[in-house]
Image (cartoon, rainbow over all chains, first blue to last red; front, side):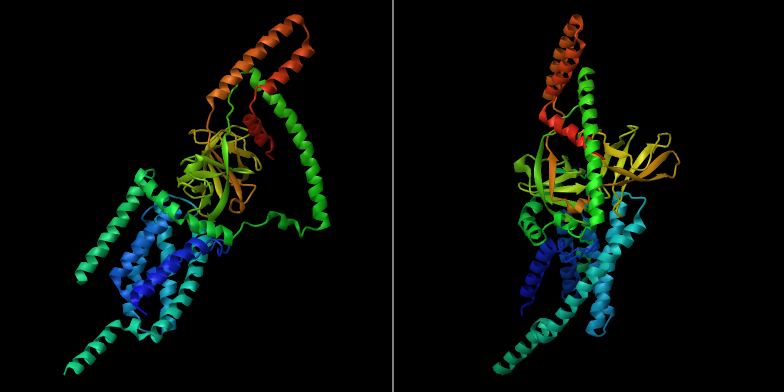
Length: 183
Length: 323
């Protein structure tokens, strides 16, 4: 599968899930963040710049969609995208462990940074810890679980489709075969 | 190449921080409002889809599991409430007569548009989407009522949908007053879901269960809309003011229908009332000359009742329906 097609499908699906499903599948106060999936996947498999651009675009969309402080989620997603790229460079473990670490870090970091940004922009003096405990923590756990499952599935899919996992290698192999034919 | 990537990411970060500053400094900026409105117009069909997938809970179903004892208790409460309503009806009529006679035309024409709640967001931004927009005369800043009290304020409007910031949202600020003492304070939401009424002077007498209403200050909402009751009483860090936790009767997230208050103070209604008062004054003076006090009283109450428009009656009914 072509990378561009895969990303387009991913972006469309996560946007649809966020718009349509995030409300109905809310458990008590915990609400998953589907946009984070696209941001993390693109950051992991395409690097810093595409990840940051996706993060910025999805973050702004989120801010305009939910009426919060404009730019808060954009900043949060960009920082999370950078951290995910960093983790991806440092870690070289089993896909399950890698997916778990990335999912947990990304989800908790998103909630924490957005909480700090929201609290700073609203100039709140009280209820911070209660908020983190009642809303941020359950939401982060919920998002982390969904993200972990999807990352693991995507990692498995990429193994089965070498054209996506190693586009460069595939291109090199084709080029070499053409060179051999000419010879 | 690597340096170029870093520069682009840095630019995106700076733009984000710039947007945050811009949004905080100028929250009512028309450009941001237009973009928000545009985004909401585009995504409104998906939000409608969300409301189809997740219909609001059937409230009738909640009573299915009540035991006989609980039903008996509810029936008793119902009869007590009926008695209370009849008493309140008396007070209401008395209030109407006195208000008319004292020329207190502090009454509002509650012109409203009913709307269906499509979705409610429980996240950091507690926002509800309703199925009425600018095409129905809804504008940013209008107050929204549920069947049991104040619900929130319209923050963004597209052609067919609107976003309502709930009163429990952390950035929500509403001027409110205690019904008993008429002391006004600021009602704010919080991330932990509580409503807090601040800046009530410590000298005022406040008790748990006291009703809290909108004060009407600021002009966005009419005065006297029920918000909730006092749950807990604390003093703030300065020890000069009370910090009251407010208990709302209903769960805002389970609301299905709301009323958007499209009309504010109606000067025409006030004029009608003043004319009516003059008529009543005339009637009073002529009746006092004739000395027929019983006729005078009946005429006064009848005319006073006639002097109120239907919307004002509704407003008084709302006040009367408070616990």
